[in-house]
Length: 108
Image (cartoon, rainbow, N blue to C red; front, side, top):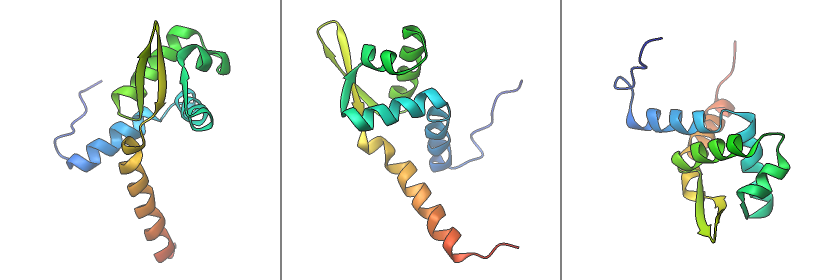
Protein backbone atom coordinates (compact mmCIF):
# COMPACT_ATOMS: atom_id res chain seq x y z
CA UNK A 1 0.00 0.00 0.00
CA UNK A 2 1.12 3.53 -0.71
CA UNK A 3 1.43 6.45 1.63
CA UNK A 4 -1.73 8.48 2.10
CA UNK A 5 -1.37 11.93 0.59
CA UNK A 6 -2.68 14.40 3.12
CA UNK A 7 -0.98 17.53 1.84
CA UNK A 8 -3.68 18.02 -0.82
CA UNK A 9 -6.32 18.55 1.87
CA UNK A 10 -6.98 21.37 4.30
CA UNK A 11 -5.77 21.29 7.89
CA UNK A 12 -9.39 21.00 9.01
CA UNK A 13 -10.04 18.05 6.70
CA UNK A 14 -6.93 16.29 7.99
CA UNK A 15 -7.88 17.00 11.63
CA UNK A 16 -11.39 15.64 11.11
CA UNK A 17 -10.00 12.54 9.40
CA UNK A 18 -7.72 11.85 12.38
CA UNK A 19 -10.65 12.23 14.78
CA UNK A 20 -12.90 10.05 12.61
CA UNK A 21 -10.22 7.36 12.49
CA UNK A 22 -9.89 7.54 16.28
CA UNK A 23 -13.60 6.83 16.76
CA UNK A 24 -13.73 4.42 13.82
CA UNK A 25 -13.66 1.25 15.91
CA UNK A 26 -16.57 -0.16 17.93
CA UNK A 27 -14.35 -0.64 20.99
CA UNK A 28 -13.49 3.07 20.98
CA UNK A 29 -17.16 4.00 20.62
CA UNK A 30 -17.88 1.72 23.60
CA UNK A 31 -15.12 3.39 25.62
CA UNK A 32 -16.51 6.86 24.84
CA UNK A 33 -20.03 5.74 25.78
CA UNK A 34 -18.72 4.27 29.03
CA UNK A 35 -16.86 7.47 29.89
CA UNK A 36 -20.01 9.48 29.16
CA UNK A 37 -21.85 7.39 31.76
CA UNK A 38 -19.15 7.40 34.40
CA UNK A 39 -17.41 10.79 33.95
CA UNK A 40 -14.02 9.20 34.69
CA UNK A 41 -12.64 5.74 35.31
CA UNK A 42 -9.55 3.60 35.59
CA UNK A 43 -8.44 1.38 32.71
CA UNK A 44 -9.36 -1.75 34.69
CA UNK A 45 -12.96 -0.53 34.90
CA UNK A 46 -13.10 -0.27 31.12
CA UNK A 47 -11.54 -3.71 30.71
CA UNK A 48 -14.36 -5.14 32.83
CA UNK A 49 -16.93 -3.54 30.50
CA UNK A 50 -15.48 -4.70 27.18
CA UNK A 51 -14.92 -8.16 25.72
CA UNK A 52 -11.24 -7.34 25.15
CA UNK A 53 -7.95 -8.05 26.90
CA UNK A 54 -6.32 -5.32 28.97
CA UNK A 55 -3.48 -4.66 26.46
CA UNK A 56 -6.04 -4.22 23.67
CA UNK A 57 -8.10 -1.79 25.74
CA UNK A 58 -4.91 0.12 26.57
CA UNK A 59 -4.11 0.43 22.87
CA UNK A 60 -7.59 1.80 22.13
CA UNK A 61 -7.24 4.26 25.01
CA UNK A 62 -3.89 5.36 23.60
CA UNK A 63 -5.45 6.05 20.19
CA UNK A 64 -8.27 8.09 21.75
CA UNK A 65 -5.79 10.01 23.88
CA UNK A 66 -3.45 10.70 20.93
CA UNK A 67 -6.41 12.13 19.02
CA UNK A 68 -7.20 14.40 21.97
CA UNK A 69 -10.60 12.85 22.68
CA UNK A 70 -9.76 11.64 26.18
CA UNK A 71 -7.44 12.74 28.99
CA UNK A 72 -5.71 10.65 31.61
CA UNK A 73 -4.49 11.49 35.10
CA UNK A 74 -2.12 9.25 37.01
CA UNK A 75 -3.55 8.07 40.32
CA UNK A 76 -1.02 5.88 42.08
CA UNK A 77 -0.24 3.02 39.71
CA UNK A 78 -3.39 3.56 37.62
CA UNK A 79 -4.48 6.09 35.05
CA UNK A 80 -7.92 7.62 35.47
CA UNK A 81 -9.47 8.52 32.09
CA UNK A 82 -12.13 11.07 31.22
CA UNK A 83 -13.47 12.68 28.06
CA UNK A 84 -11.76 15.80 26.73
CA UNK A 85 -14.74 17.95 25.75
CA UNK A 86 -12.61 20.33 23.67
CA UNK A 87 -11.36 17.40 21.61
CA UNK A 88 -14.88 16.73 20.38
CA UNK A 89 -15.55 20.32 19.22
CA UNK A 90 -14.29 19.82 15.64
CA UNK A 91 -16.47 16.72 15.22
CA UNK A 92 -19.44 18.46 16.76
CA UNK A 93 -19.06 21.42 14.40
CA UNK A 94 -18.62 19.15 11.39
CA UNK A 95 -21.75 17.13 12.12
CA UNK A 96 -23.75 20.28 12.89
CA UNK A 97 -22.66 21.67 9.52
CA UNK A 98 -23.71 18.45 7.76
CA UNK A 99 -27.04 18.46 9.57
CA UNK A 100 -27.70 22.07 8.54
CA UNK A 101 -26.84 21.35 4.91
CA UNK A 102 -28.91 18.17 4.77
CA UNK A 103 -32.03 20.02 5.86
CA UNK A 104 -31.55 22.53 3.02
CA UNK A 105 -31.05 20.11 0.14
CA UNK A 106 -33.38 17.89 -1.74
CA UNK A 107 -32.09 14.58 -3.00
CA UNK A 108 -32.67 13.22 -6.48
